[in-house]
Amino acid sequence: MLKNRYSASLTSCFVISFSFFINGCRTNQPQQQPVFAGSHTCIECHETEYHTWKGSDHDHAMDTAVASTVLGDFNNATFEHNGFTSRFYTKDGKYYVHTKGPQGVPGDFQIVYTFGGRPLQQYLIPFEKGRFQTLPLTWDTQRKVWYDITDSVYKGQEIKPDDWLYWTNNGQNWNGMCAECHSTNLRKNYRSEEHTSELQSHSFISYAVFCLKKKKRNNRNKRRIRRMVCYFLIS
Image 1 (tube, rainbow, N blue to C red):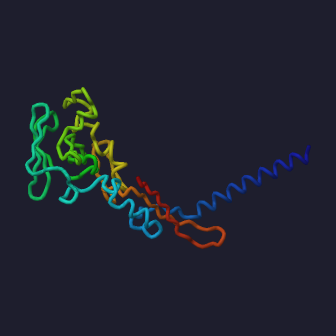
Image 2 (tube, one colour):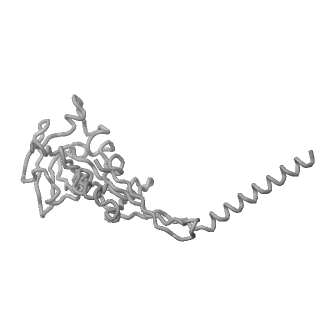
Image 3 (cartoon, helix red, strand yellow):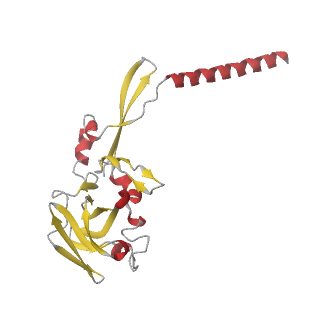
C-alpha cells in the first residue's frame, strides 16, 4: 500500500514538473504572428497555378473602377425601371450614376469599385461612416444591357426604401455581406460606439490567394526555416 502511494506521488510530481517545463519552453519561445505575403510571393513555387488565376474571374472579383475594368455603358446611357429613369455617365474620369438613393430620393452617386466581370458586373458606391453599398443596377456583359438584379433575385417582390434588402440598407452592405470574399487582407476597424468602419486592406482586389509567411523552429537540426503556406482558390 505504501509503495503504491509512493509511486502515485512520484508520478504526480513528474507530471507537474513536466507541465512547468513545457510551459516554460513555450513562454521562452517568441510567438511570431503570420504576415501577409501577397500573391507575387507564390509564383516561385506555383507558377502554373498563379498564371491560371491571373486574369481569371477570381482575379477580377473586385477592381478599382477605371477605364480598363469598367465594362458597363457609362456614355450617358439610361435605364428605365418601375417608372424611374437612371443615367450612367462619367465626369473628370470618374464613373457616376443618377438613380434613387436612401429613402428613395434621387441623387448622383460615384462608383468606386467593380464587382465581377461575367456574366454580369456590379458596382460599389461609398457612403458615410465607411460604408460601401452594392448598386442593384447591373451590367449584363453578354447581352450588353443594363438591368435591375432585384427582378431576378427577388422575383415578385417590391423592395421599398425601408426594406432591409434595399440597396442602401444593410442587406446590400459590402462591409458586412461581401468584403471577406472580394478583398484581401482586410481590416474593417469597426467601431461599435460610432457605428463606423475605417477600412484598411492590402488591396480591395481579390487575389483569391492568401499566403502566410511563418518562421518555425526545427527542433531536430536547431535551425530556423521559413515556411510558405499558400491556399489557391482556382476555379
